[in-house]
Length: 352
Image (tube, rainbow, N blue to C red; front, side, top):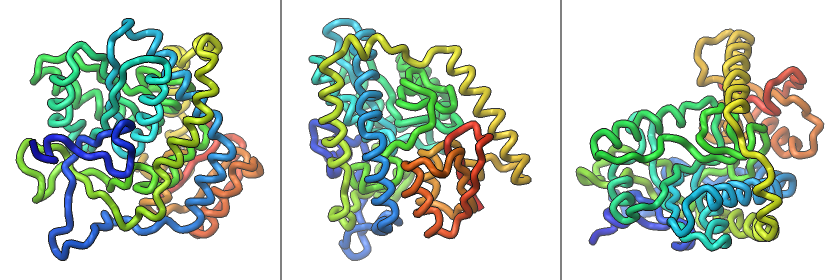
């Protein structure tokens, strides 16, 4: 069998994640491919470590609650398969598979590609489904923003189910459901998720994924580069291992975790209304009909900062300690900082 048919694990331990991706290579000179990513400036690492100091325990508790809920609502003895959305969802898939195993559940984690133009990778699902008959499959991401990924997942999974005669879920499992579009979530709160601030060096050293590429044979997995040029800055396993230490402590009290309610339909509706109203108000405020210029919440904002020019950072409470590294990063990027106590979220980014 070829590598295309089996995928690879990037910089993760193989037990934590296997990316069902075609590994792409720079054929021009044999040098490692940058995937369009340079070494993140120091401000991004400061943001990561600041968010870890502030929220590592919260992430650990939230992943533990998800794991306890999945374990308790999945038939006893039934294996669980996690398909995280590469890249942002993969650290949470790796944590969740560890948590499920700590609880005694047989669990497997794959990283799969979902691209808006192409949907979720059908070749990856074709790999997973026959290898795990009878297993419950969950699509995992870290958070929702405005709900675009949730809608794309639903559309493409519906097409897959129709074409293959399967009944895969079309819902996301996330920690923070700001858009109210998940199937399972712990909270609808906006909080700083540490892994959001860095791309490849937080996600197994893989690049963004590609739905088409000359090196991808017909019917192969979506493609990605492994960015070896960034290995010296890789924090993928630092995040997983550090959160796991706190998560183990949380999992020693599964009954306490199970007693805390998950996001319910009423909370989702409230989150959906908040998302719709906030987007409408902010678009009117900045005079645009392009909703992509508004980034809801910490996670979407700090991800956007890495990829595109940003005009301003709106913060409900700029003096909150966890905001200090974010403010420093924004100022270094010439963004204006605006105190906005009326915000529906803790943080909103406005793109140029």
